[in-house]
Amino acid sequence: MATERKAKGFTIIEVMVVVVIMGIITTVVATMFTKGTHALRHGDAHNTLQRAHRLLTARVTPYIASAFDPDPAGLNGQAVVLDSTDNTSDQFPPAPTDPSGDTFLTTLRFVTTEDFLSPTYPSQFNSAMGATTLADLSPFVYQVVLTPEEDLIIQKLDHSNNYKVAIDSGLPLQKPLFFSRESARLDTSGSEPPIKFYHPAADILVLEVTLTNQIRGASGAQQTPTQVLRTTFNLPSKGI
Image (tube, rainbow, N blue to C red; front, side):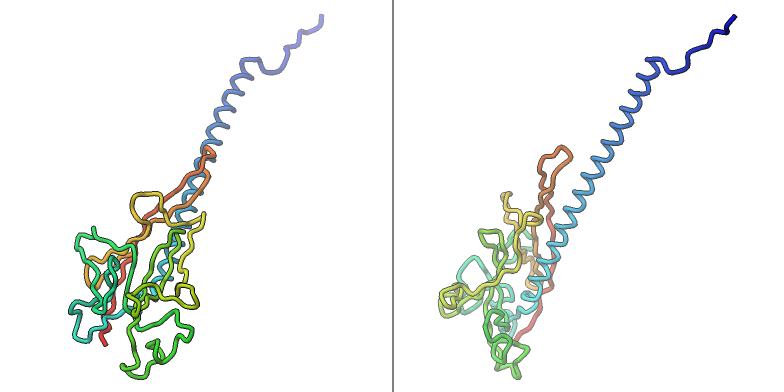
């Protein structure tokens, strides 16, 4: 009499249980991977913004460091940072100050011994680097301003023409400092300006920059991480 052999294998219920468990594990792993990728993109985006801020600060710093008080007796109505809300007069009106920091300038205007945009710069009469005596030094007025194209530029002002932007061969004397790019650009979408030059005290200047970026989120939609970054400068006192 032949011995009856039992069939080996899994039942349908057992297979379904395994499939469900594998589906749950796959979903959890996929979710964790997506969130991790999204977090990595966000982190990389903010690192890009911080690099852009360091670049912008490095471009602006030499000009701020060159600013000086043109009055040998002290401020007396003059200042390193000038009032950019009005035409700069021969008296170099000081910028408005507000200890609370609520008052800000969207344009940084300053007096300097350096004629940065002169074709002969640096030379004896347009740079402290080439001057041999204090009599060789002359004050020049420059400004750092945001253009409608979201670029940051430096411009030379013409003291003989009511301090309007100087012109050379029909073109304004200016130089780009920072270009807005898709990967890191100045954020002009909000109600506040993307560049603020706080002047809370005569010897302090705060540069506040709002930068934004574009990344693809976990759902595939475009997202724009935004970051507000600040740099504080101690303004020099260089009376001549």
